[in-house]
Length: 294
Image (tube, rainbow, N blue to C red):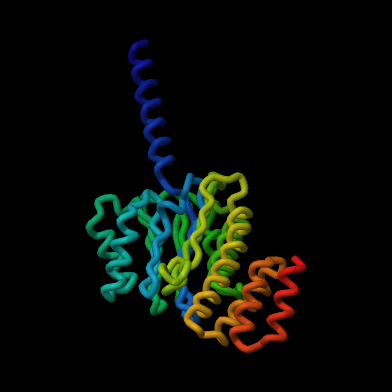
């Protein structure tokens, strides 16, 4: 009887250990991508894991982006960016990072550089289904997925969707989820995009930095936040140009902002301000009337 109890305790402890290991593993699907037309680079990610945006996405303007996941080694993020900045290509970066890591077979990482090169790595110890696909300007990868169809759909959506880098990466996440996504379910999602001087006032490079840490519908919530973030990004870009007295470019940018936020009175007020600065007095009055009416 004692032997039976002892064996039961051993099995129970092993089960608890496996469960604890699983809880630390970031079952995730992500895309690291670069837009050569705008210079934007970043990561979009989703997972059945609390606060995935605090762990997986890393990016540096003018350098590249890294998504580190599975039994994530977060040093892959900043170390990977440092190596990219030194001119090391993504394939070699992964080789350097994993070569010195005893647990490399538990890691998964995707890297893209601002010259369009990319690479993805999935260790043999990552839980199935796990794998990735990489091409010019992007790397998609995931682990504990419903199947390979998840990353195939993500790749296809990214390549076929028109719009901004944020639009295309969000489409990739939705496509991955439509094929089953994380086989354990959904909980968090995030998007992090950088570009030189794209942040508030031009003082930082953070173009879009949104996170859904814990939500029943993280994809819908990320989409809601993304709409707001894109307005702020476009608006901030226009105002920075205005402050630099680049009125023609500022006018183009602020009118684009008004197109995506037609019911925002404050945006229309700034349209009026910038139109006036650009010498379009009559149109400035029209924009001011629109602002007052909202």
